[in-house]
Structure formats: structure tokens, C-alpha cells
Length: 265
Image 1: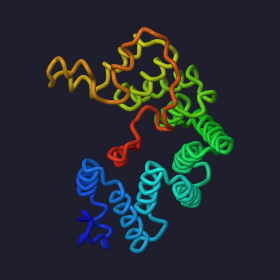
Image 2: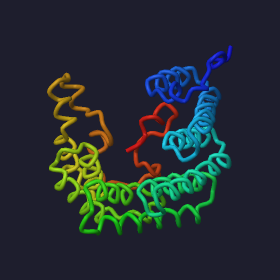
Image 3: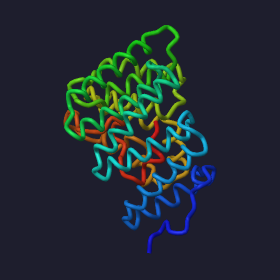
């Protein structure tokens, strides 16, 4: 029996209910019914397009989710088409050099790389780095501008475009400006120390995050010692120098279907 049979997604407000999304996707993932997950996202995208139009942020999000599912299912050409559309829409809605457009460009580059279009993928990444460097070097740069720049330099593909020492400097400034209160920025800083082979400092930074401290206070010693948010203390408990890996453009975060709704950084 088809899980989605008899389920209506004609109303965008129902299908965009994140609680229902999580429950349905988690359930289907556990059953391994990825074809039905794809169908769910197609219906969500079509329902949003019909009721909201392509200039809606909800439509953009459903387009991205569908493209991610298609990519994970090996349908690279169709995913590429959607990611290109996503980039053009974000350029039009937010501006060519906007953070939203750069995120879309990075997503497209990952898709292009996965289907063998490496030269074009590299050019998109270089363009994104140039744009985020320009933004980070402005006197008006925000902690998020600096963190986004650092994260890109730490996780981009190909590895030859990474700049860990530049990223470390940007991440340090972002953490200072945010007064050590942003777990995401502290995570970025920890990864930067790891990339420059300072795992001891990476562990220290990771343990200083507000999230880790709350967990340590409320968890059993065994659970608290592991840590639970990206990139994880286990990464830094190694003695060998850090080696670049073939992580996705989102860094070390998983790309499984179940994580799609939680993948935005």
C-alpha cells in the first residue's frame, strides 16, 4: 500500500507544517520508502507554487528540498535543473551578491560536482569565495558574514580552494564579536583549529560552547563526554594531523534524507 495514498497536500499551510514534515519524512525514511519521500516533496513544491507563486520563500525552500532528494536518489540532471532555477530566483529576489544567492550557488556547485561538471562547479565556488571575502572585509561586516566566510573556506570543494588560516582569523573575529555566545560560530572556530592541526585547542573551544556546557550539566558523564553537536568532539580526539576530506559543501554535516529539514546552517 502506498503510504501517501489518500493524503491531500492541496493546502500549502498543511504541507509546510514542519512537525508533520518531520514525522512523515522520518517515518518514510525508516521504511526505506524514498520514492514516496520524493513524491511528498513534489507535492509540496507543486502546492506551494499553485498557492503562493515562485516569488515566495516557502516555494524556494520546497524547491531546494525536492532538489536535495533528487540528488540523493541519483537523479542528478533533474536536481541540477532545479538548483539552477533556485539560483536564478534568489538572484532576482535578493540580489546577485546576496547571501541567499551565494548559498544557492554553493548548492549548485555541489550538484555539478556530483555529476562530473567539475570545472563549472569550481568556478561557482571561486565566485562564492570572492563574494564572501568581499563582504567579510567590509567595516560593516557582521559576525554572521565572518562566520559564513570562514565556514566556506573550511569546507568548500575542491579542497585546493580551502584557506584554513584565513578561515581561522575570520572565525576568531566572529566569535569575539558574538561574545562567545553562538554555538554555530564556536563550532566553526573549533573546525578552523582542527584544520590547522591544533586539535587540543579545537577540543577546548568545543567544550566551551553554551550547548556543550548545558549538556554536561544535565547528562550522564558518558553522554556529556561525547558531545552531540557538529562537528563532534570525537573528531578532535586524534593525534595525527588533520587531513582534508571530501565533505559536502555543508562541511561535515550528513546529507541523508532524514536530515534535510535540519540542514540549514
